[in-house]
Amino acid sequence: MPVPWEALIPFGLLTTMFAAAGTLLNTSKRTQSQGKPVRYNIDTWDEMMMDRDRRLTGHVRGQKSDLTPPEGFDTSSAWYTQQNS
Image (cartoon, rainbow, N blue to C red; front, side, top):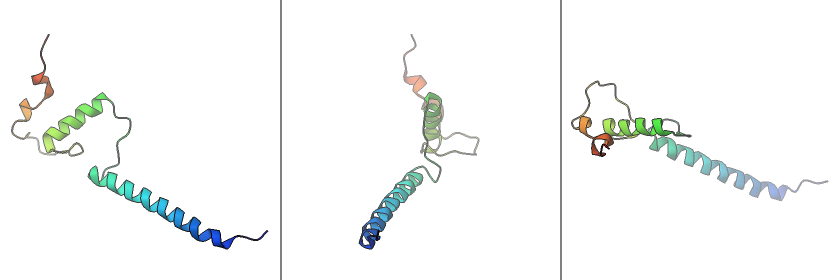
């Protein structure tokens, strides 16, 4: 049975386009996460730590090695805005 060589060109183009789209999507997500891998299965603890990192550095994936918090960090928590019952 002869090989339909004409079909290899569209197959190659289609494969290349899917590979390019996947690579660009992965690059975009990594760029938004400051070069770190994308997070999956985020639970409540991870959300609290991401909120803390956002309040410390301004980005949910940012971390600091400096021990002094920025101005206003002590009162920027959601705990202070909730009513105690």
